[in-house]
Length: 112
Length: 110
Image (cartoon, rainbow over all chains, first blue to last red; front, side, top):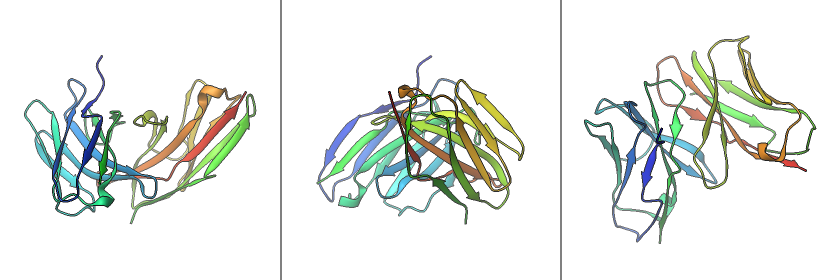
């Protein structure tokens, strides 16, 4: 079966711009989580959505936001990009919150 | 605040040389402890979930165990294809977000 699909794979943006990343979960999975991965901080939780509702949120500024659509696809938006936002952004899906998550390959965002 | 530490930070083994990776955690009521492996340029790949102390799970050359304060990932007779970063994560009983450890970077030399 198809895995978690994230688009685009690579992205280069200028400081101050905004960006939207997309995630299509495994068919039937209703829980979608987003993570930021950097060499210095490792994997850090951003937020989790279940049935179009945000269930949990990590300690990130309000510039980071997300949403989930009725087909479980999810988008993540970062506004007013900063150099420190350069990272690998990972999306993961699961049948329900707390189960083992299946991760996508991520979107590599570079802010210049 | 939930915390996860992993040791060692990096480990080099000869093919066939068994060893163990450690994951120590503090959490206000453990809902689950998760092990993942991550290859360079890819997302983490789910390996195991452990829910209670004393639980063990196995998959090929890997065996994960859990106590009240730590988990071990035992690798028996590793092969070069086992080379990856192994990540541990915990989720508390409130069902809040996952907290990941920094990972152990494993290299298995032929």
